[in-house]
Every structure is written in C-alpha cells, then in structure tokens.
Amino acid sequence: MPSATAVPSKATPVHFFSHGSTMMLGEESKSATYWKKCGDEALRNGVKHVVMMGAHWATLNDEIEVAMNPNPAKSPVAYVEPSKYIDYKLNPDLPMGERCIQLLKDNGLKAKANSNIDWIHDTYLILVRMFPDGCPPTTLVSMNARYDPHYHIKVGSALRPLRLEKEKVLFIGTGGAVHNLYRNAWGQMLLYRDNFAMENPPEAPMLDFRQEFEDAITQNSGPALRRSMTMLMKMPNYRDAHATDDHFIPALFVAGLAGDKDDEGTETVLGAEDWELQNMCNSQYTIGSW
Image (cartoon, rainbow, N blue to C red):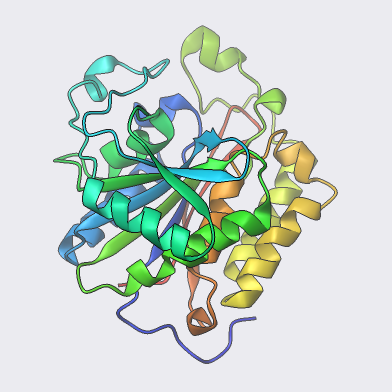
C-alpha cells in the first residue's frame, strides 16, 4: 500500500494508456475523451515536451534506440478514415532525444539514435487524441526486443529526472492492459466496422488479469510499484492476457518512471476504460497529478 510520504509536487504525472485497436483513433470512446482531458491538462500546466514509449518498436540485442528522424512519416492506420490523421503534423523533439540518449548512456544502457524510423499508430494515435490542435515537441523511445521487465524498469528510472525539470516533460507509455490479438473476436470489426460490439462477455482469464493489473498499479507506489508490475509477468494468466510481451512492456517503463523512493504515496487513478473486440481491455491510468 502507498506510504504517507508524497512525491514532490513539481514532478509531472505519468500516463499508461492502452491504445487498443487502430479504430480507437477514429471512433469516440471513454478512452478518447480521457486522452483529450489529459492533453488539455498538460497544456494548461505548461508542458513543453512529451516522451513516449510505444508497443510497436523494439530493437535487437541489448540496445535501445531513440527516434531522431527530423521528418518522420506516419505508418498507415487500418479501418480509420485517413482524414482523421493524414494531415496531422508530427513534431519530433531532437534536442530532447539527445538528452534522453545521454541519460540512458549515463545509466549504463546502450542507447543510440535512429534517424530513419517512422512513427507508428501506437504513438501518434494518442497524440492526435490528446493534442488535436497541434503535436507538442515529442520524443519516442524504443523497447528492447528481449522484453526483460527489469531492463525496461531501468529505462524509465534513467529518464525519471526529466519529470522534475522546470521545463515540464510529460511521459506516456502506450500499450495495453489486456492485449492478446489471438483471443480477440474480430468478426464485428471486419464485417461492420464495430470494434465495440460485445456479442459475448470477456473471457474469465482476461477479466482476472485486468483486475490484477489494476490492483498492481493502483495499490502500490514507489519501489513497490516496480515490484508489483514486474510480478504480473509471472502470473499464470499473463500469457492469456498478453500472447506477446510488446504491449505490456510500456507499463514497466512507466513503473520505472514513477517507482522511485520519492514517488511513495503517489496516487494512481483509472481514468477511463473500454472493452474492444470482446477480449481487449483498454484501461487508461495516470500516476500522479499536476
């Protein structure tokens, strides 16, 4: 349980957002409303930079990369009207990217720039929804394809000092609380473009893991948050909820960012949630407040 010691008020909040299917970009939902609310709050509080780790970019061996393409393209988004995203101008933050690379190196991680990477829907889907009037300066950090939970905790921990900067930095991990594409019911989406149709309730393992995820992230803070989130990968129903590790890893990045001793007592809220495709749970969490 959280301790009574509160995180310093100047530390920016951290978000873990479940981006769900591509249709979450085009369809209205509780999650989309919450993303917009969080974006509006960030702008009101003077955020100057956004740093994100998504679920669709992972590097090999023991390296991690930071996106340094000054003019990235956007990967196409299936089942979404192109007008909803095609003209949205991305705003890569190269100076912040250099700072992130240096911080990662200073903490013993093999970090390097990637000057060719284009942006994928898992990141710009969230940016379009949060900041529809214009993308703030944004830096993307890759995962590592070994999907070591402790490695990604360390990535978040290395970048945590940026939460305390006077020129405010907002961190976002975008993945999924329950995200197993093999267990989803795709028929209604493929036939009728209805991603929220629920012909049947979610299966029990998905419901169970969704609750375990909520308990781990909301009932712990500081170092206990890091332990509880890494523990989830050892749960018997983890593989039912995540056939692959990629959409869970950004939650560990978030735990690293918000799991320092000074973060003890920080409240985490479940801001919104949508079930898609029967078995995909898109939970939206915020650790800390402005």
